[in-house]
Length: 449
Image (tube, rainbow, N blue to C red; front, side):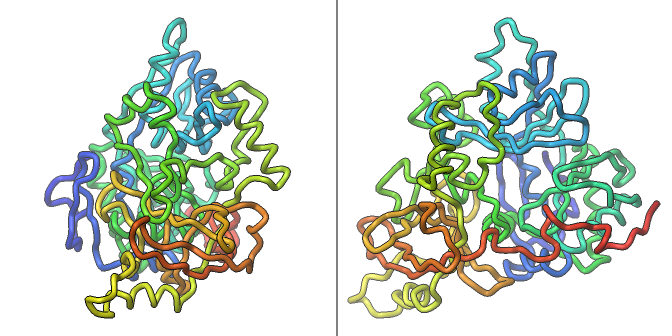
């Protein structure tokens, strides 16, 4: 997906960065203004135009997806439905996740699962009617915030109230067909809009016009990434956990390196290369796993499920970081040359070089006294709540709101600081516009029939 150099996508952007072959706006107005739009009006993002997309089709495609993913039954899906597809290795650890939409006639469109499904289809091709095809001509926009429905309806000039969470329907945008899907990452009401690359410029113009009409703002890649996923309570593979295939599945690892380098943990967890490996239950996705079919890693998944049921596993929570301790880390850089400062914490979020998806996930051990009980990732400013927060994957016995813990800040070999933290609500944003539960018919008047 590429934009012309004079595309309106770049209007107002003061920084543009290449990502997976696409030049994307990195920042427009700044982190606070761009993010807070999703709590008052809405933001419009183009970041996911870089998404790897693959179509899986054929008479045996449903059976193929049923084995590759923990979900089922793909054969029962109807046009307009989607699943959060999860893929495991033989140890029951996540090696891939993404959205899988059913189009029609044994055709599924899959986002962020391309390398894995490509690899799996090649291995399963003998005697099977399964075809995989990379898709490179699709635009992928997002509108996120309380005004998102009104903005998208205004741009499409049609009623979209009937789209339930994680469902989609066809519409027209910029004079061309598109698909509107109710999904987003900030936790608030949000919509994805997909269409053909040839229609991308006209579609964006229509959305941008409606966005500005309702007082919204465009958001860049830099501020889209962590600032939305952590408060929204949506763990992300480049921010909160790592895929566990690079040294457990050499064949897949060699194949996947063509698409994305290994995710190496940073922060205090850097002394353990597997510290950020997770099962679906560790991060709140156990509900996606259906044991009534065969899939890769099923035996290990059954053990992980049993451990979770016995409260012997881990659980994803939000942590609020202590203000004074965070301030002490920041102030350490101003105490003179005789004092070695702590690792920087003043940036408003932990990033992978701040520019791309190919560097380290910053993780910090979570402690109860001297006992390591999990890890914290995705540290960021929650601009709306005015707190420093992160997600944390911790032992279930500590997952009660109000539990006082500590986070170990700093790389091994560097000065390290114990930062006090309190287990907070998860997901952190639980306002009236929460996407999974929001009844738009009660909150947004209908304008179109």
